[in-house]
Amino acid sequence: MKKRLFFYVLWFFLLVVLAAAGAVGSAWYWMHRPIPLAADKIDFVVDPGSSPRTVARTLNQAGVPVWEPGFVWMARLSELDKQMKAGGYQAHNGDSPWRLLQRLARGDMTQRQITFVEGWTYRQIRQALRANPDVKQTLDGVSDEALMERLGSSIKHPEGLFFPDTYIFTPGSTDFDLLRRAYEEGQRILQDTWAQRQPDLPVKTAYEALVLASIVEKETGHGPDRRRVAGVFTNRLKVGMLLQTDPTVIYGMGEAYQGRIRKRDLQTDTPWNTYTRPGLPPTPIAAAGRAALLAAVQPEQHKFLYFVSRGNGTSEFSASLSEHNRNVSRYVLGQGRNAAPGPEPAAPAAQQAAQPPAPEPEQGPDQ
Image 1 (cartoon, rainbow, N blue to C red):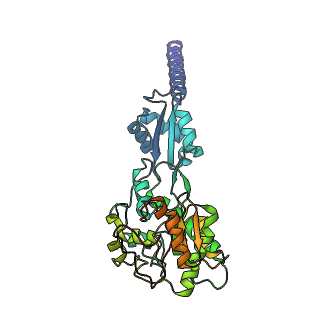
Image 2 (cartoon, helix red, strand yellow; image 1 turned 180 degrees about the vertical axis):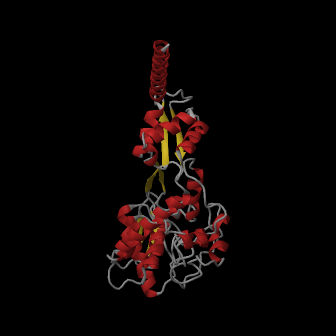
């Protein structure tokens, strides 16, 4: 009887060992077996504070089929559940559950990039953020003033405060995170540039320099001309002349601008119309790059008060109105072109403050 009982116990023990070995073998096989994916790569985002069970559900919802209980136990027994990091990841064809878990523990995230272009308006920057499928939208319905308050800025108008650059981010990053990075980068570069300013500038604050830089950015894309263009506006500010720059008028027109400036547009007062108001406009009109910022605080010293586009991206400068009018005849009227700028204006300040706008209804006076 005792021998039979011992035999049964031994067999039971062997069965338990075999079952355990089978379970371990099955678990090992499941952990290292490639997950069948419907595509070569599948993106998924792990939110902050996600548990192993939440991550498993996220994977399944993204199209990465994993056995939820198995993933949970695998993460907990390996203690990698304590190391998983939030962010954007990719599951690749051939990945196993164990490889995915290790990737999460290492924080081996995928990266995306978004570019804010020099000369873009804040509206264009927001449009780029909304159009990017990897950016999580959190600012819908948030006012510009509330956004600036969240950024800790005392300035209520967001225009020009987000530095144009290429930003690397992980999928699932929020629109606010990216704007915060662009804002902080803009503030850092602005303060660094302001510290390099020339003495006796007519702009008295870093923000005014940013406003002037945004005008320079919109007026010319030709690098060698930037400091000279900035010098024209600096000279005008010093002697009290109207800036009379078309990009500011266009900005003030908003959606009403359809590619042409007419006489009535130049005479319609807005806070940004530098034909009707002296000095700088109240805010920037676009995002200024580093070169435009440096030009605004280190303008070329000369006597020019006018410039006109040559039609090839460069400008012709002059110190007198009569000389400027000859340049207009040569480079604008002589080529049969309308004087009004296109959607991406590179038009100069052209008339003295006392000079009335040109009478032609389709010809802006800033050429």
